[in-house]
Image (tube, rainbow, N blue to C red; front, side, top):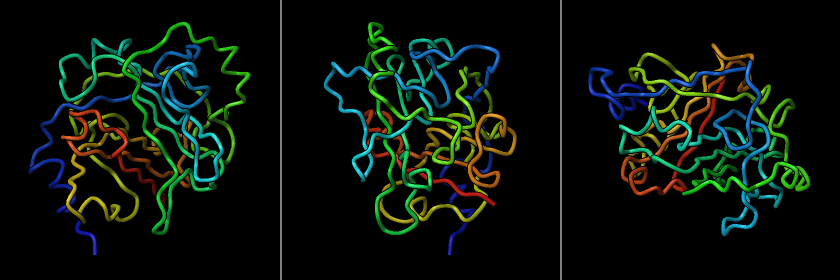
Length: 232
């Protein structure tokens, strides 16, 4: 049986004193290919060495969220645990029917990709010709609409949608948080539907979380990220 108190103790010991970063959604601004945003057409340099993420069925994944650390450097630059440049992207399956999450022993269908640099010569027109999943507005994704975002510093317990925020769940915490040898002690990204339903909805007002170990974060081993979502 899961012990929520033991799970919470992984992230803070009695007090929420850690710095976090809340996500601000700016629906009045047009989303940029290179900018931090929710859903939509992802940045990708097909001329580079990274292969575009595909799911277990061989189909290309869709963008859930991306963070451009170059553009948001003023917010993140005091935090050595996060990159100070490049882009971090969160992808989920476009075909699984469960937003890429596995409910059995098979691996979940998601990828977290870090680009050390961003190639500003990538053309949106070329990416549109790749027929990538649009990443919003259908049942394959929790994203309701593509939206540019920004970040601001906050306390760990002051917001439930952001980076390094206190983990929240509508059901029991996932087993990997308090089982096994790896301690997933950082919330790399959390999206809570309860106060952001105009932009995304995990099932019935659910919450999506991505967790990572502090050492893996420090060494940019984002492939070791774990993913969960649940709903009421």
